[in-house]
Length: 193
Image (cartoon, rainbow, N blue to C red; front, side, top):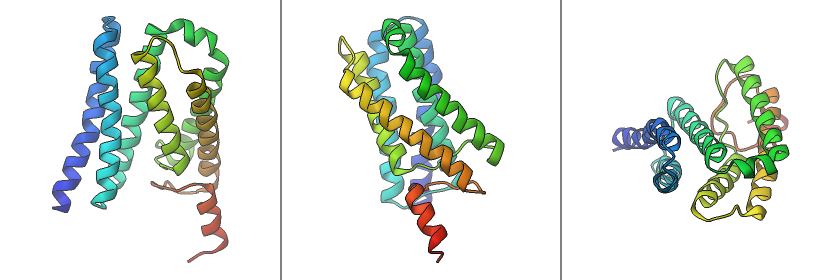
């Protein structure tokens, strides 16, 4: 059962990765109506694979990497959709968006330099930020105007989360998946098992 669960979970994650170019095609054909229904489905698969991985205790380095790539690609697709379908919002909130993009670029560059691959920490803050990002990005396409309170909450939590990941890359000499957060890393350093 464990091996079967592993494959099912990775197939769900692969769905998210495969859907990214499909969603891009939909964006560039200008079909907002189809996009706004398929994007939530893609985000929902992130919840499903994460839940199933925890429930069946099925984790792997490959699965963690695949999940992180699929997450990043889907967020990128949603941001591209913002540029195409909600460009006035992008212009209005460009300062916040630039800050997030710079933090993401720094975190990714540091991970690539240090580990030769992207990070897959999956910290508690990352999970919280991903939830806020998903809810905001789904709602921004489903309802007429953006929910600003949710947008600013998402920006703040994501900025803190990306800052935490930058610090984690600097703290952890070797690539690790599923790190809870800075607190736990520092606890482990001060109280080794």
